[in-house]
Image 1 (cartoon, rainbow, N blue to C red):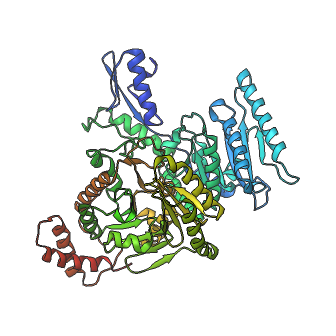
Image 2: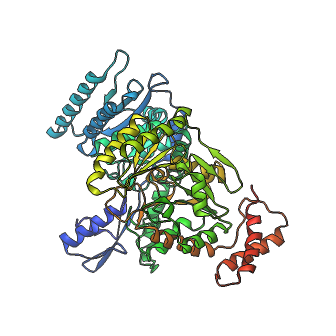
Image 3: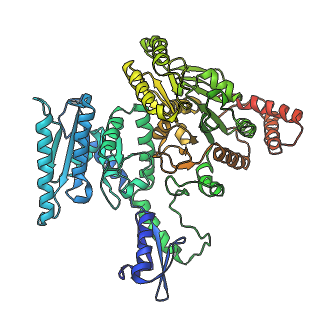
Length: 608
């Protein structure tokens, strides 16, 4: 500790490490500390502490991957899950291999179709504990291979030794999934090297949040390595991830790592040292994102500080919102879930802004959610995105197997006969059904819920639990997350991620798909509910506050037309600017305001 305090400037990979160091200086050395500005005072000297995550020589790895010949000779039908680690107890090798065994148990359809290639680089071979770890790892791999192997397939391939950088680059390039799941790690450059080498069909990065890289590589699938079931589920999700989502995640990962390479890190380090004498006076510790810690409960005063960086400078803003529980409070009957007048007005004003697009996705039918919201110039998606209607009238319906459409009536009858009554009822949503039991006496709920799940599963429908409701969906690979990405692509084009910032509030399925891509909010009064969201909002009232904040922030912009074309540009631009100003004064005469809005809407709806 005293050695570190001999320097004027000390950098760590991530902010958590900086705060740990500052706390140690306070507790062990009795230093005066400033956690906000990341300063430590000792013996009349001030030490500046800062987070500077290290990068890799990105371009060198790209060149290696372009030239490297294939390292593995496997059938094209077999996908490779790659792990590359020092043989160290912090790397979580035993947990990873046990999770892979659970994955093969839980998802037998992947047997003979995937191979886990684990490369373990020897480390501290003269230390007894490391020898024991090597023995345990090899015994475990032998047991799993003995249990699952077929004549032409073994689930795990294991290399204890070193590979050249060229060989590693070939493996990074050709594998389908990189599994980087340490129990604790400083940064872990394997994750960054994998991303740099992904120059062909994009794979998926699965990353532990306990690696320093987990704090910046947001588009990776984060998983707790201690949760073996969750690791198995994430592996399954990674292997089934659609190409467009893989491309989107990998494109953003590669862009960031190429920008923040080792040269950027070196320059940032020297720049920080040069700036030691420059007192900016902002008094803020910054991790480069401007966001609070993951899933921090947001309060009213936090919005300006935490979300302005996400919206600032973006060409377009896409608001994607769920309906029930997000824009309205949950009620005893869906027909009672009506938006407040204030929420309607804020959404109407936002929908008229030239740089804002709104999409509302719901489990309700398309016609129902459209009638409940009743706002023009909004994209509506019903049945969790199976039906989508754009403002220009463009319609999309995701195909559902015909047999499930025919089964809905039969399933509804069985549910009515067996589990309805005592306040329980069934809502028919066309291609899916929802069983509601909010009004059922507490003593009867568990039995009815269990039986309803059995009925859905027996009919081949997937039961999804909500708040005192169970939704039965046909087994299609489509949910609010996939629908959200489809809406973004069809609204803005395939390169939307370069020009559009996304704010999403609502369904957990969409949060998984948009994790690291959008700023996501879980709307739930309980801070204990597990979520993939960036932040939490306590309820629809907090969502309304967030929407008001977005409206205020977007009003600061001058009206921009982006890539949309407008005829009579001078006249229409003047009308557009006037309509934006008129929106800021709600008390103006409604007749004049509506005329200006109509002109603005006509301008806005001119498509690219």
